[in-house]
Image 1: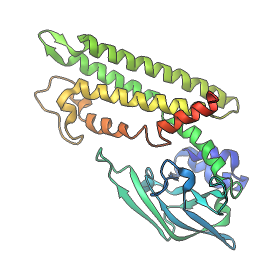
Image 2 (image 1 turned 120 degrees about the horizontal axis):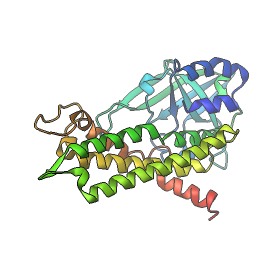
Image 3 (image 1 turned 180 degrees about the horizontal axis):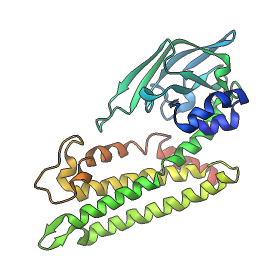
Image 4 (image 1 turned 45 degrees about the vertical axis):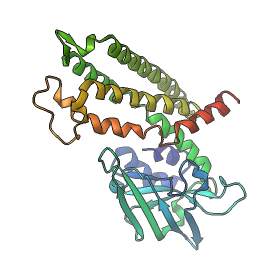
Length: 302
């Protein structure tokens, strides 16, 4: 979905006709080829190359931490098409089918036990020249535009509200001694309230940004604020999830819940996977430390 705004804004009419309908209705899946084994937070140092040969580009290099590439039909890539003094220059935005000859995918199993990430290698992969989006050498500009939408998408307000409701249900059912329930514990209730307030603040920020986008703008620098709020709130909520479910949450997500537990078993089983999965959220899409630098420079003028 992240490629949609790029295609809509920068692609040619022929490219829009080729890619937008399937992207919009979900029949065409996309992966994002940004990070490389030796280019993590410093994305501009990427070495993935796209060399023009006649009417084609020849792609060589490796992308890593590529989400859902095993399900994707296409991948959009940042590739170096020329070497410039400033490393952000000479980068272009190119698309490629995942089943092209020379594309190899290797799964990466993360700490939560899921196969959500991949390493994708390109060995002399040839793609038509019209798979280039926009102008050659403008890929860095396009990528920053895209990242604004990506970082905004981390909000996932509905999912977080559902998690808070599940945590509340567990806390109402889980005994803590005598006739008390976890929800009666003042310290736990305070943390649950803090998470709810944080989520409310996140939602208001997202609505403000979406209003600007509706009027023809882009997420811009506010996307960095959303990324920090969204990922830290996600970690806050899943920490409460584990605390509420206690040792039951530490069972593997594919194990059954202990039958003697009186709480809401349907909510406890994924606790460990969910908790571990959110630990990475403050890293991907540009670390939260990088987002704070962006805010310091672009919002505060420091």
